[in-house]
Length: 228
Figure 1: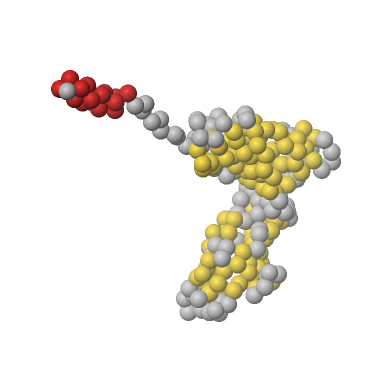
Figure 2 (figure 1 turned 90 degrees about the horizontal axis):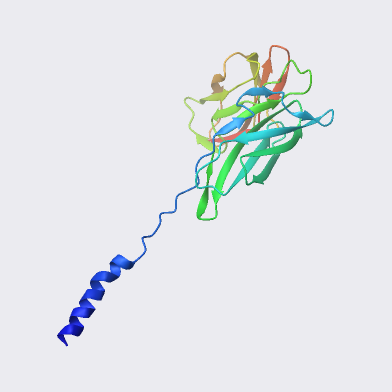
């Protein structure tokens, strides 16, 4: 009996040591974008028509990653293209003379969530293109759907403009009570407009048109906000 008890105790002590260690599942790593480069005019595409070219997208390999998803957005139309790749590059057929943004999502079958890279913007230049239109302005304040509080019936509109040629000259600011905002002020030299009159309890729509020194323009998406 004593021998049996000793054997049982020994088995209890040894059992935990025989268990396999659980392996920690690490999330996919973050891919580093390589090309096309951020806020630059891209001229490396292979021309296939007057309006289209094939462009090679490249990024670094990410740790713990089995596949990648490239998300490309046409900044003029808002159209989004998603393509998967098992390797760290992918060719896409895209429009010339068009601004785009892109990012990479790394994924693994062993981990539920993906890991997103930074978001880069570029301008896919056409052959002989010497003047590129600005990127559509990025709205920073108020953001889409944000509720804002006015100060004495006034708010601030804020945005960011960028251009691969670095020749932005001014902005036109549009605002209104429906999704076709009207011109509030033209030829604004800074990317901010103070003392914009608003009324409490109303929803406003606004956008920015960016202009460069050569007369090229681009319009942002229409954003909306509510004044409480």
